[in-house]
Amino acid sequence: MKFGVIIHGGAWDIPDNAVTDHLNGVQKACNIANKLLKNGKSSLDAVEAAISVMENDSTFDAGKGSFVNQIGEVEMDAIIATEGYQFGAVCAVQNISNPIKLARLVMEKTKQHILVGKGANLFAEQMGLPFVAPESLLVGRELDRYYKIKRIPNFSAKNMFRDSRRKINGMGTVGAICLDILGKISIGVSTGGTPHKRSGRVGDTPLWGAGGYVESSVGAAATGYGEDIIKVLLTYKAVEYAKIEPSLNKAATRAITELKRVNGLGGVIMLNQNDVGFDFNTPRMAFAYQIEDTGLIVGIDPGDAKRERKDY
Ligand code: ASP
Image (tube, rainbow, N blue to C red):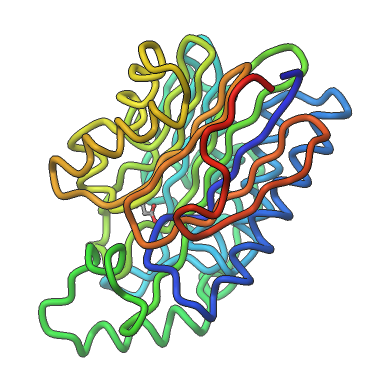
């Protein structure tokens, strides 16, 4: 294929009343990335644009609309990466609209890979990223959820990935992988983490090989219950499996099988120069993908897409 994009909008027990918003959101992001790639823009630009539009969409647990932590604050994690082991990530960052842009600045303007908390915010200020008031990221839906969760004894964030539909309703982290016309793969993932997380908690998203990984022209981006994704280095494994499996769907399925070994719940999307693949073991994962100018495929339920796709 000459260029392509795959997007995820989180793997959770996404409630019925949030399905349309999730599908619209991933479709919009996919369209934006596809247009940029078609016009010859780099896969990094396309990933940044796709993730930014989902961070600005309060449907998703990223940027505006992020879950609130135990002390009522929004703390966000993000990673962006491209070939040649180039990546930048931010953890527990606050008061900025687009953590993915900050992650890219870490990658391109520093000698480090990961900045956390206060230091990440200081760097955002130095780079001239606008400081936004906490209220502009915290939406009413999440404030209601915060108070609701506070009343639940022994609340388990992990259960939201399994069967929250009738109880507390999950929202999705966002991820994107793009291939540009120069043949370069880039990935990005952005999240507000899990609901009612401890202040300072960092999930899989900004961790290299857990939330995202690119190597040997294969990209992988994850979503799901971060504590378990970290245990198995989900995206590193997915890329390793791509070296031995005949398709990226098969590689993704093997990676999800690893996740099941630790009773983990989540999903992974994958892209290389001639294949696209994904899998998840949560009830739903919002996804969209488009290869060159072929039809855009969008789905959320298992079996929504024709899974064995090869040779674009
Ligand atoms: N993986 C994210 C985290 O644990 C959450 C998600 O993907 O929805 O922070």
